[in-house]
Length: 303
Image (cartoon, rainbow, N blue to C red):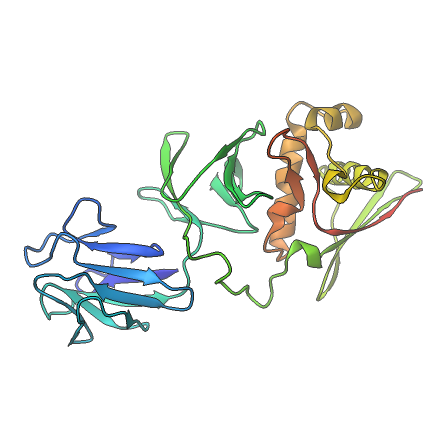
């Protein structure tokens, strides 16, 4: 993420939005109180390749490393650059020029960044709200009961007593390169074997090799969804494998709500192995709430 820090106050660090307005006006993302600063003074914007600064026709000017920026000029920024608004004296320094990421922020708390395609609030151990991009390309918030609601950039999501502000950079799509060690679900193969003694064996095969998973309760739900996908091979691909969570709970003799918990745990397990869009390991239908094994490749062996 791009970050900006005050030179005279190291504790004052700003995480940049994809479009970050700077000035004295109330609606500015970075509000400055100095009387030499204009209402809408300057902007910082992620182009998809770099951060650029523009002076918005301010009365008293904007400077980068001591050079005045002409109004409207797009000035590319490098890490370490000093910025000043309204006077030549440097007041801010660019600490990071990394691309913006989807995240949620709350007052006094560390930001929660997207991981495995999910923003999990308040944290991974207590997933009261999971935000992700669904199959239709819409950002949604999923609650433990499986209900979905659309969300957008700068929405405030109340989780318990804490208001979280969601940041979904418009410039993110198609612009951020994945870490070389991360993979996508279509590169993943689940090798699931149900043995005659009832034991379940699962290997996650990634481009760099395979890893056998230690036994977990949610693996039974994975097996049931794998069987469902294999049973529906006569249906069009878009219709294969969908099952209602309450039907799966009856089939597997689980408590109400267990399948939702298992879905989350399966996604989290794959995210921990380096799957960048692990939210798609198990998909949820946006209209019916049904779930299915997603775009992973599958090798299923039954007794």
